[in-house]
Amino acid sequence: MTFTDLFENDGMKLVNLLPRDGEVNYHGKILDTVTADRYLDKCMSELRWEHDRAFIYGKEITTKRKVAWYADAPVSYTYSGYTKVALVWPDLLREIKQVVESHCTDVFNSCLANVYSVGEEGMSWHSDAEKDLVENGTIAALSLGGERKFSFKHKQTGETVALCLAHGSLLIMKGITQKHWLHSLPKTRKNVGPRVSLTFRQMR
Ligand SMILES: O=C(O)CCC(=O)C(=O)O
Ligand SMILES: [Fe+2]
Image 1: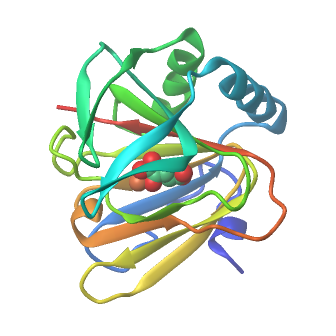
Image 2: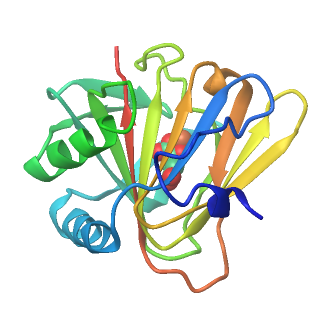
Image 3: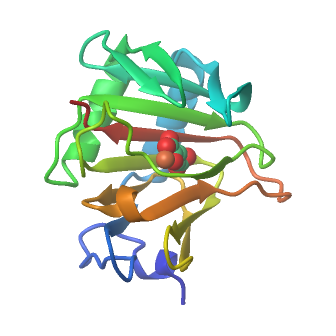
């Protein structure tokens, strides 16, 4: 049995997927398929997608995946050596943010949206502990579209934990998780459909 089988429905008792040094909860599908399909279509067409730029080991790169960043106000945010200015929430994301907040005890003031158009697009190992984020803040990631594997790796011990993120599912990372664990969305050769992740965050 996998974690995904265990947590098909929200409302079941959530367990911490990490053995130590952080807390990750998989809520399973929090949206019915019709709603998840509608949100996926709307996100694909309505969000202002752009290739992300970053500095990796001092070299400027343009990511294959596209991103869009939203917040309560047009604040700026420094991430991977780049300063970006957020767009203000469109109604669609305000609505989705409310749904996500109804499944947790946190509130969010920003969202980094990612779109992976094919399985060959992914995100390499990283943690999200930028200076502009609240220290030990919560990140809630809503997945829409193609089902993908998501992995965690402990920074000191190398232990790994992996799960599958279903269409319409919610994953929450909290507490000291970002200090001690890296996470990644591995590329896959499988023929998966486009996937959107909406990562709701707490900025300072
Ligand atoms: O696509 C995802 O689910 C995770 C993306 C991620 O790790 C990030 O935006 O920092
Ligand atoms: Fe991340």
